[in-house]
Image 1 (tube, chains in turn red, cyan):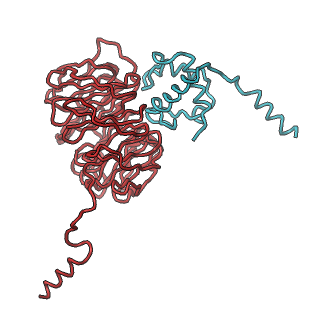
Image 2 (tube, one colour):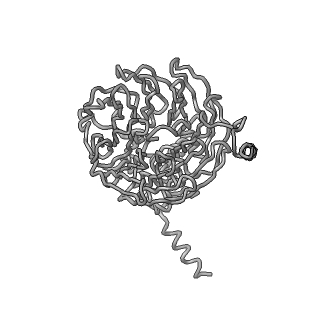
Image 3 (tube, one colour):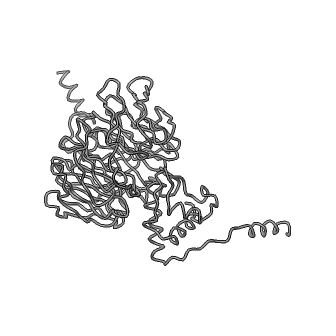
Length: 383
Length: 106
């Protein structure tokens, strides 16, 4: 009886037992960077609607973000070195630190405990406690760090634009262990970890080629490939650096943006041999695989940035060309691929397409929108 | 009084001749948008730098507008700065140089 009473008393205490009406959920929410105004638009993916705005995030040109494992919080990496933690439910800033003079992106550890930021000025990687944003580690670098990504086991990987080296940081122990993975090539501009966390792919600006590092190897080391793409053609000016976070991995291939060419390059994932080239509308910026499909979607650098193309990874042919509007900066798919959200900066809107019919489903007003980030990213390694 | 004025007058005399570039109002609006949004991709929306150098008036430190215009038009070899000549006239590049030198810092 005594035991029964104790249990009953416990159940009456707040915080015990199960709530009958859970307050809310964040699984189909997202944030859109409004780059010029330093704000974030909070969106509901299912309702195809904006539901709030968070302001006061500073210079958000080239901003990106990552989500906590419970999808409750977003960590936003601003150009001006600001790291901001945003509550997806209350639409409020819960923590913010100006942690460097100039930064470019970040990542969250696989266990959600650490947030790492990639900095340009001063160059290096800083690691923060995900709860409090207190500084945990400060790893200087001999230049601007790029391509920061998480790896399983509380590890991060990054590269340095100026010195052309890649580093692996293990933060699972009491003290971080940093390993120099060697020379990867001249001026790496961005890098990405494949969806299976097998390969770190690094794009080079200073020379032709792409570098791969096998992360499943006990002693990972750089391997060069695609050394001679576009050698028969003169390079065109690159008015916007390609972004590799969206590099697509599909049909046993990597599909990569040719730097200085209006081409997509298809590479066999196993052999790293080029298998095909797809001429496209302009200098590719993002190449993103549509989930649960053979298709990749591509947008382009200014001034040819009013167009999005869809390419079939089996035939390497362009199957659709869309014109969402002036200055398309980013695309984000619904996690199961049914819709794509496209940001159209100079028309201050997001356009939503059905990926099967290419029909426009909705438009949402946004101020000079750039990156679109759905909370489902919380569960994808490398994002 | 004279002691105060003399250095001021001297300073005024030493100022470089203000460079000008004749650009229509609509095009000027487009160019300003391009500087903030497209140049801003590398140099930062507030021009405090990124992959590209800072381009604030303080960072440019009174650089020669014609020299800046030629960098804009022809780029900087072995860096990520592309030549914008295919997209801009010489007048427009000079307009951007003067705009950058005289921007109010926010």
